[in-house]
Image (cartoon, rainbow, N blue to C red; front, top):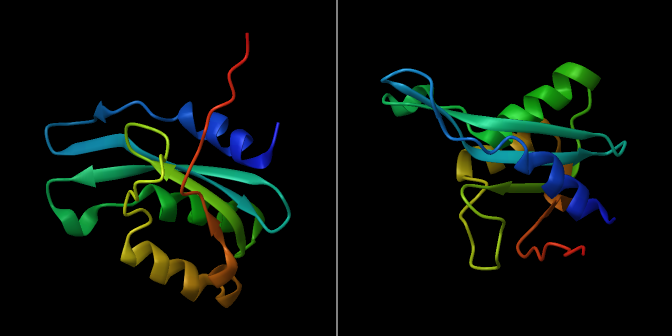
Length: 123
């Protein structure tokens, strides 16, 4: 199994859109990233009716990576809403997340972000 499939399988477990309260939603966008050391960290979005309090799945995964390991460099990342990336361009990560990754480490300019994923079919 290649690293992209590992990232996908890990993160698809998190996809479970949930209404936390009448004002907060979670798990509509999910993310898995591979750190410089090869560890996988995941995150999911927290969205509220007040957009300034939203936390993107990508930043949550990056914060987990830093909090749990002290690492700041991401090798690879996958993020999606309701379907795996299909090459059409999802707009993820958003500009704020891209800026956050660059501020976390300039090495993140070399991060691979999946654009196309074909799930392996097993019989």
